[in-house]
Image (cartoon, rainbow, N blue to C red; front, side, top):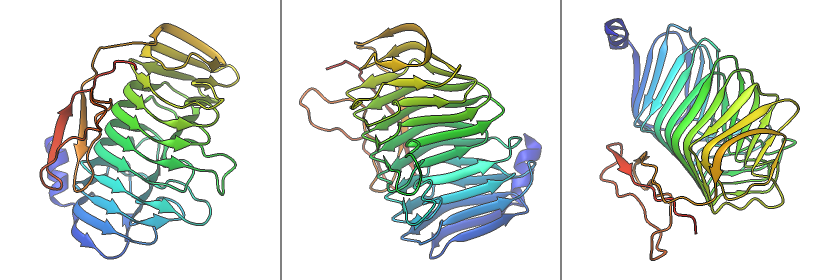
Length: 322
């Protein structure tokens, strides 16, 4: 741990407003903090190269109205260990092929796991795989609100959050996915060769029109644990789909549909609950973390925030089914 902090003392640091893309061929540790990216064409943040002994920290940054062909806010590939926290991405999108990752695109070395914690991804659109997560991902305390996945240049929309090609366990936990829209899954897993876990995620008022709210393709094992699915629109699709011999486990989860396809192992799912799931979400600037339920007077409630880059809070979540 001491070595880790000492190494960051010599890290290359970027801060402040950025008027063009940061294109970094990673040869040392990086710290990208308090940067703002507004309306930049081409991925505002591009990181390639590096080694698995290096770390790239992205914290307290704000991306708004940016666009690219791949990676609306960021495009990170190579070998560096990425840690992204307290960062907000709003209204970013893709234009022209391949139209992947309106929120962002990350696909790093299997030996370089990455960690996203306390981030807000809001109203990003016009791409497949809105958040493209290749490699070994660990996502927690994410506020994903109002994002739209489409299939303009791809065969399918491939989910609002897309995971692929991991040889180690991955996890997405303690987060809210609210009012997102896709023609092909909200969460899409592809060729995940070790356990992929969804833990304590609130899926509220999402609109999915095909291939399951959660879809697992060519995966070893996907586990949905202690999640809430409430007031989602499933169209003619199932809530969970797994192909071939994959097994998808559903454990202690509240669902708003029992229509499934493929091999499922179900342990205690139900369609009503009044138990809260406390959430830690992140708000910054004009982005507020939505509370994941309708208040008694049906008035939308937002988490208050103070000044940009300073607020994280416990958000209570009531899960009474309507």
